[in-house]
Image 1 (cartoon, helix red, strand yellow):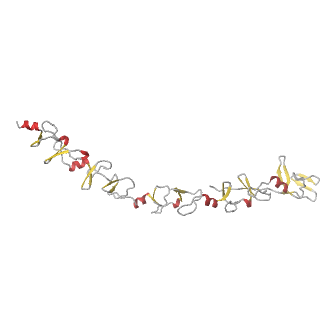
Image 2 (cartoon, rainbow, N blue to C red):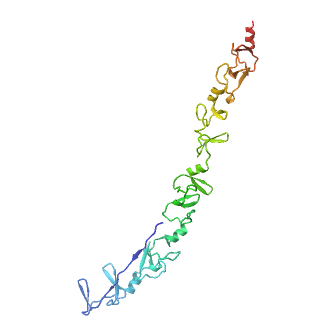
Image 3 (tube, helix red, strand yellow):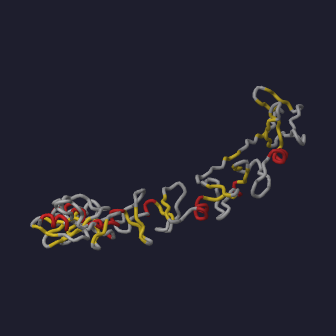
Length: 317
């Protein structure tokens, strides 16, 4: 909303004077008493009277004041009376007003020299318009004036300078913020005040992260104790509360398969066979001689070998 202005309309009255020589001079032309100088409308003589010249199409025609007012004066949009030639007339959007009728619809203040606006054809001063139609800042309870910078959130309105962080009290402006009940925080203050701390680096977790043993971690901080690869989203295990990827755990702590010498982890549902101090992957538990699977079958240890029944019989012949 910007303030409008009304244009003032004015007229110049002239007086025809009678000289002692009975002459009336207009420019270079001489008029005598024998020449008629009458009102164009009522035909009464204008000698010695005030008159107004109006454009009649074939030159300026003189009118006495009463005739001019009745024929040409505008009607005041407020009081519906004629606006006389000697009254200060204000003009706004094809409407004419007496100066004293050009007033605020609410508080009756004169708008002759004041900024104003029009609402549903009613004239309002800036103060009344703002009180009735403008938002109020929820922080300071003052009107947010039209044209000023404001912030809106959750159905409420703030002056730009009133929308501040609840902690550091600095204006948030167009920066990101985090609401907490009826309070608003800049991101850094919210993290310092409320965000959980990473178990490893002790810095705030603004978003995301993983939980291990009920403790929060940044994804990039939750890594294998051995090779430092990130463990988020993949299988892992632990030893003495330290997380390990399966490869590192198997290499460092798992027993080796008697047949293939690779670690036996038991992860992923894998089964293994244990006999005395030796272990085998289930697919590796086969007869040393004929390679038949010994899983679920009888077998015979023979030194470092394990034999099926047939191979054991043959070896004893």
